[in-house]
Image 1 (cartoon, one colour):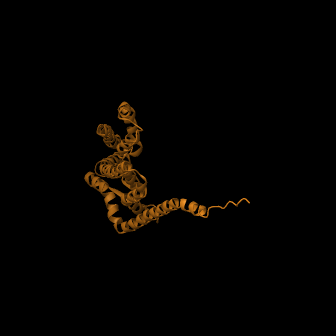
Image 2: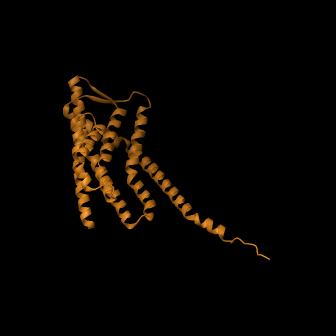
Image 3: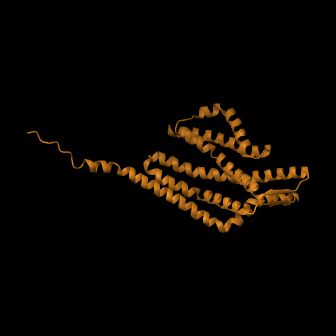
Length: 258
């Protein structure tokens, strides 16, 4: 009599256990999203009492140039809810920007356990220098490029003999667009260094395509800044210098690995 083939009783347990790592990762991902959303909400709510100082800070370059030129101007609203909507947009944008370091830390905490030690080091350094570059680009815009742009705008108002009655929506959109644009544009050298470390590009390729990159940087500056040459050059020149610095950094890193 041939014995019946009995299925191992632990087969079902093994199959269930094999799914456990995926469930653990899914739970960790869910917790990361909750932390990120909670951080954004709390920081945004914390920014509400500072709405007026933040608005005054964004208006400071405009007020300074207007006072210097003796120009008349007003920031106006053209609908009953426009002021409220702009305050909400401004507070939310500030909440996102202030929360960004914590958001990056939460994402890094989720990703780091699955990376090799070398990859962890690259990611941490990338986040650190990425934050510095973003703040540096936004600071350059706020303290140098934005006053120059305001000066040029007032010049054309005086040339036309008009009074600057600007909508607050347009002004805040203009300022935030410039600040974020400069900050993101200054991430270029970090991206190049990371691509070089991963082997996608070489220093020889970067040196060979200098002309094409310079033209590309000019086009990028034209897209991200007002239509005046001075502001565009204020973005393009530092960006190209950072491009040359990234070539030097990659060269030094390559020598260090030999």
